Each structure stands twice: as structure tokens, then as C-alpha cells.
Image (tube, one colour):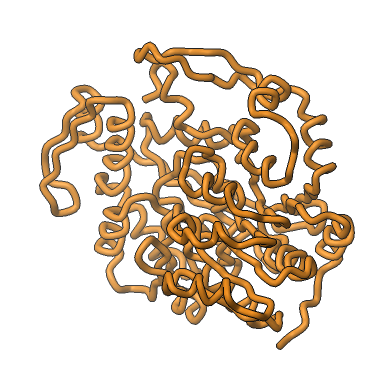
Length: 424
């Protein structure tokens, strides 16, 4: 068992919050929150410790805890019966489970004196989601929150984390104090809150700090290499232009007969993005040309499973490749080969992966979420990265993709544009 060697900024954060049982380490991506968070969790001294993370991080957390701490480790994703073993364990124990499965382990609600760690705590933004309700119902007496982007620039999504930090404020009072908003209706007659901006932000930061939040940016710790963004533009297809006029596409796409009917804004946006990406033969040719001209280790981010299929077919077996998606996480070729290609689906790998052996990312398609986009960039732009980082943004000219990219550059989600005129 090895002893953790903390970096100065990690020691400072732990020492700064040493007297607190509920803390949030809102440290920029790449600053080693896993080490800071685990040290804080174990130092709290509770026998029952629960780590909740993304599915793709289960193995990483399990290996980390086994490597550095003399505790029993339970992977609750393996078997539901392991919850009982965890509860009945007489020794200090750490259980690990992912967000999508935690609410299916009902017995966790019965544990008293539970110490809780949430990796990427921004994933409990939606208070109506099963995972959030379940986590808030746990009998946690100590909490460690970890996130590089705690709200993705949206303070209205912070309230669940405030509750875990034991901030005594109603949701209504929170909104009135820190959020600028108005009521709006979008054709349904049911009003909803439309956020216009934020106020008293300095007070909000002070409130968080007084309840255990520690903020740290990469630039405060280390000077990372330059980032270069290169836009790879190409024309839209005839199918895309026709679909945008009629809202209907019927034909062959990626070797399958497809019918797209964009009869509402969300569907039209979804299908338009697909026609821009794997439905555009010019993009696939551009991707192949870029890969053939570059012998580097590459990371390619994508959204849709059909994109992965189309990319593999277009590229062929010219390079070793790895995958991170909902059904597969295998980085063996990434680790072994300096000319490998690693395909990463945003939802599965934009957060938490350490891919700094690569210095180049290709965005075959863009996400709608600002948080996912910002997190994805940090997979290579991290501590120990020595090279300049290059980001190739594939984009159809005069298409919705340009609007998506412009919105992401403003650190906003493109879904916010759904209620605006001409969002497509």
C-alpha cells in the first residue's frame, strides 16, 4: 500500500477545510481532485464511506482506494447483495457506485453516520431526478463534493449542492437572492422561470466558502501549455438543406434507410445535427484526410452511436483504436500506441478521464452542453501536459452547428436557445 504524496495546492485545500465535515472542492479539471477528495473523506474517520461517481470512473476509484488506503472496498455495481455486506462490515469500509444505479440500492438509505463523496457533483443539478432525490435522502453526516464545473455557469442549478453543504436557505429565497428571472410561457399556457442573469454573485461565493467550498483554478497552480482551436469547415449536404426547409428526410444514411420527421424543435435540432455529422460524406472524408496527415495519438469526441460506426468505416483499420462509451471502456491501445485513436462519447468520457498522453482532440460533432464541452477540453489540457494542445472543430458552414459553437464559446448551453426565435 502506497502513501499519497499530496501537491501543495491539495494540502492547502485540506488544511483550509480541516475543521469542516461538509466541504466542496471546486477545483479546475486536472488538479487532482481524486487525491484531495479521498484524503478528506478518509481523514473524517467514519466507518461507512460511500463514493458516487460516473460509471466510467468506478474502476479508477476502486483501484485508487485499494492502492492508498487500508480499508475494505465494495463495488456496489457488481451485485445488489454487496450492499448488505457493506452495511454489516465491522471494519472501516468504502463503497463505490455510479449515479445511474445508486437509487436502486434502497438499503443505503438505512445507513447511519454515512460519509458521502460525490465525484462530479454537478450531476445532481436536477432536483426532480431520482438520483438527486435519493442522494439528498441519505443519512449523510459528512459530505465531500468534487467538481471542476459545479454548475456549468448556471447558478440556478446549484441548490442541491447547497443543501448537501447544509446551507439553511429555502429554494425560493435562494432564487430571489441570486437569480434574475421572469415568468414566461412557451405555447403551453404553463409558465416557467426564464433566467435572465445573476446578482449578488460575490455574496454567493462567500456563502459557499463559509460552508466549506474551496475554489481553485488551474492558472492559480500551474501554467499549462497553449490551446489552439482550429475550425474545419465544409459545406452542408443537399439532404440537410432540404430537411431544414421541409422538416422531413427520407433516404439512406450510414447504410440504413432512415426517416426523420422534425415535427417539434427538439426533434428538428436532433436530426439536423445528425445530418451535419455522420450524414455528411464530406465530413467523413475530411476526418480521414486529417487522420492520414497526422501520426499523433488522437482523441475524437462524438455524440451518437451512429457517428462511431460511420467514422470507423470511413477510417478503416489503419490505426489502433480505443473506445469510451456507454457499452465499452477500453483504453489499452491509447496507453500502448503513440499513434492510436481514442473515440470518446461525451456522456461517458467528457468528465474524469486523464488523456494527457494525447495533445490533439478532434470534435467530430459538438455537444449542446457547455459543461460537457469545457470538461472535454480538459481531458488533454492537464497537469503533466508538456505540449501545446490542438482542438479541431468540425463544422458545416451556414448550419445550426455554427450557432451551437458560438453559444458554447459563451459558456452557455445551446438548449437555452430553444425558446428563442430562429434558433435553428
